[in-house]
Length: 126
Length: 167
Image (cartoon, rainbow over all chains, first blue to last red; front, side):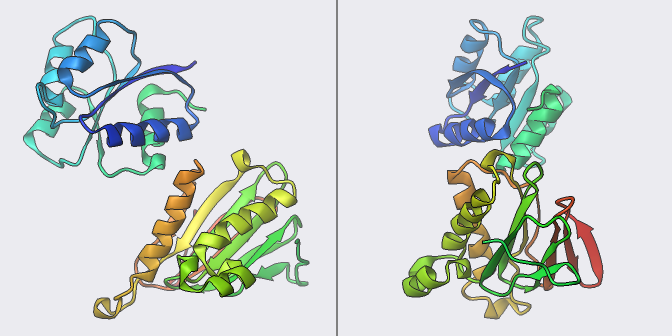
């Protein structure tokens, strides 16, 4: 089974790093969508089926925690697995996102760490 | 080039050297990994493995030496190690990679050049560029390490300060 992934980060470099790490992971990938903030991320989710979201926190227009709150309030999106990828550690925002079911992957991460988190969250292996 | 193991089955990889073997009775081993980087690779299908003990990160530190003794540098030693394994039948997508060493000076004030950290960074850069994941590592700190790789199972083990861990 391949998984569709949505990468949300306002840094194009970080999205490129996450994309290459996913490609290295051996996890079978379907479509990988990208967005630069929560607003664009929600727009993608309303148009495409996504199995996993890698979500930054600090972004313009709509932060990651704000987007996650909206997702969890929407029955169509509430169950989508989310990995919070941020350099923030132990902040109120990250704690709140974990309470909403997100898994925290601190930046910087190694490709092996991302692979392990994706495997744990999706149950999909190479 | 594949080398013969001694009667004990040990193939010792010296400083600035690499060895490759397809002998299931052999164990590759390298001692005294301080800031040096030890790399063990193993193809569980071809039963081919190799080990590198690199001292320095960049070939620009001594290009002539890098040409004559590529295993001395991470930058030249890693490609040489992988190529030597491929020549014995290993395949990139099957290779299991383990790292050990890359430690720091026991006295931080004397670790001006951060050789260990730079050795690891160079390896990580090469793995990233070539889309290779590391299966396990025991790096950093300042205790010397011994890295071994069993050719029958591919088990990579690090011994340090009286303890032993399987990567």
